[in-house]
Image (cartoon, rainbow, N blue to C red):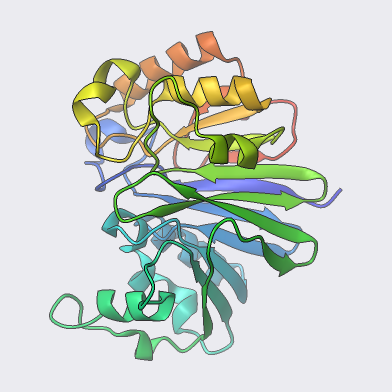
Length: 281
């Protein structure tokens, strides 16, 4: 069976967390490396992509697909530090589907990587990069039997959720989305139906959610409700609040597992075999 796995390189939201009290769950912002057979897909380019890029360079991975949920800093700030993008033997495709008319994935990267904000511009990337724009609910055909379904998410300035289908298995990445209590998001439910794994925005809890309405994030309880409604097997709590220490996240993980046996909190270095019977810790 072809390998289909996801490795967490960064699970924090908003800003990287101090390393001291966060050694188990990690301090880097959003980045997930997905392996589909011989193909590599990277979900988001937060600070976690720096370590991911170093690993891929050392492993001589020369072809990449980078799928961005949106371009808030915590999801793109690692992009200028991805070693393979500076190598002329590398081919990469960078996707964005949340941008308004009149802008593009290429323009967004050019605006982000320019003086006086950053001294290195995309012109210094040596890799062959194809910047691709799309509009949800478009399905992206990445080749080699990899299909990526997309959906709009409820987040300031827009965001995109992804479902990767490969070899009869499926992984959903639904982060940076705000739910409406009592009104499950139909677009998300359609996207995640019967998926093996869902990585979901669990920045808050139901108890703390009310005072953060409008911030564009969700709760582990809503993740459980969606998982139960859609038949999800494994729920990965993601986009951890920067103030949540290892101790806090361990407690939240226990609460989630008491409600949904297939729940686990994302931590840097965790690898999930999509379609496996159990989630490794």
